[in-house]
Each structure stands twice: as C-alpha cells, then as structure tokens.
Length: 77
Image (tube, rainbow, N blue to C red; front, side):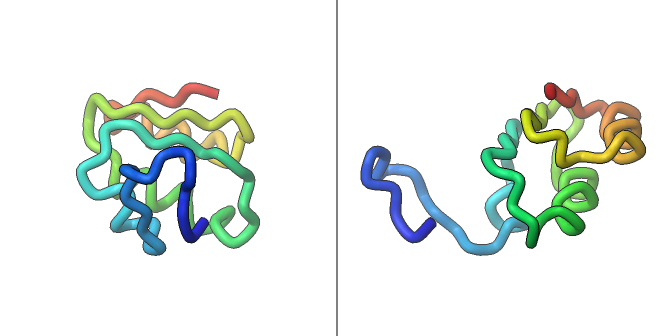
C-alpha cells in the first residue's frame, strides 16, 4: 500500500527485507502471489530467535516452518 490513512504513524516500505529488519513479529496479512516464493526464505533469513510469524493464510510451507522452528522462531497459523 502507498499510505495507511488509519495509522499514519506506521512507516511504510516497499522492500520486504527492509520491512523485516529489526522486526520481532511478522504478520502475513494477505496471500500476495508475488511474495509466495520470496517470503518463506526471507522469513528464515530475517526473523530473529524468539521472533514470531503470524501466517493465517498458510503462505509459509511446512518445510520452511520446520526451519523457522529450529531457528527459534514461533509460527502461528
């Protein structure tokens, strides 16, 4: 999105890797097709131990979910 009228204080970035930098929680809000291949690996690389990924759309494949768990990242579906 280009702007978020309801939460103007939220910093918007176009680059997914930049958006995750320093994040402790990542929420998959929509099953965006252009991120389907990129997002799982990006989460494995970017999320810190003790971080949480909320994925109600089941975008993160089971194999990547196992890698997140072994890296100490909690996955909530």
